[in-house]
Image (cartoon, rainbow over all chains, first blue to last red; front, side, top):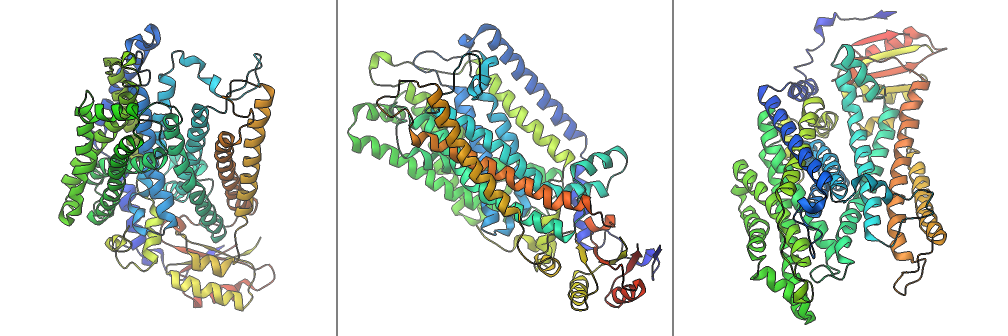
Length: 458
Length: 166
């Protein structure tokens, strides 16, 4: 039995209420045009090229790569570290900024979380691609077997397996948890088979206070778990190198240095993805220049830490009076790896200094260009550290040079396309902004949509 | 289960109605909101969520599992090439234990969310309106004994725009 005092048409049109407008604007982004499908096709083409190159490598062995003694870790491991690093800023934005109550994170948190998941998915491929016999990758897992063997837990490579495995699982769970209320919005705004899918995915979310209560608590706890996790993951990745006694690697500085570098590169990738996305999806009202400015400030801060680490590394080499250490660093400064080294200094240390100028932080075109340069610079940084150090170990007779072959470049390109492919699928099928959180920011005293950005500075 | 579901357009009206329904002792309440609203949570079901207990349980289990896995498997297969260090070297094993602590803690948290938020709701279904994910708020008052007309009157006086008697 149902009754109502007023006729239905007197209740306000949902698109005129503030919350209703948020629903309409953000759900409106889920119908992109022809450009979207062109980009998707291009990505698929790139993935296909990468997969074909990998098939060549599986058929012919690692000889098709540029890897040879003494440089047995090259572009693949560099790319692995690069993508793991990209993932980190997503967790920083979704978990660390959440714990610090930086409300401006709302505008970019969903995209950054999605980026984390896809970047880890990309990174996870590389240790397997790097294997000579990739079909035996499961030997890395500790499982009871006929050979009576167990894995060697003293090896940092095993720590990697656990760190990356945990990181992927926790990122996916965190991403999904935050998505549940928004999936319910999608369910209530769709029909037919889509509604059925979203019904299952949203777990029957109804927005009752008891659901919200446990949701709130779970989200906070997940953020609290993700924060130490993100620091541990890149520390473990850095120990892959720091634990070995290779000059240029064997340093206690590596863990904090890599964590800062990871967040730095990840924030740049956030800008690389968000700046075009907000334009194409018409989300300028929600992702405002002041949000981008906040990201730019974080980039500037992490860039200073990274630059400081570069300087301190050279100081270590000089202060230790270790000739092997000094040789490696001299080869970066003036030797064969100098062009790459100076490229990374320009991209990672000098260009971000532009962000000291307030107008530069608010110039979206400039932000985009700088973010691309940082992406290049951070890949180069890992390459210089990994290949550059292996190439100049101890005795001059064991020196050797390395450059990636076309197979390695193709797989790098393929991985970029794979990452973008997933990101494109994400912005087509799921809301790119956390709708429920955007509304929440409104009830916390923000009179208009735009004032979402006015509160909270990093 | 019988009761009345009132639909509100204004959050403030709903908050007031919840507080007054509590003082008038109208019956078990449940409110619906499109956003996470801590004031509303405090008014409807005060107290801490029990999810944190499962987080702790998961974390402790994970840590123990990490230590047991590393120490037990190393003892099973005593590889002697340890560079003079003890076979059971705790520092590297702590890395594994740490990661598993986080992993199991996160799994525990999500299980807690699924159990208390999702499963509890499926076990005790309440009426729902699709506008609750859009821009409307709802208040469900269970009234097996109280006169439903009285509850409808209560909701109407406090700004409910629609209601439904179940």
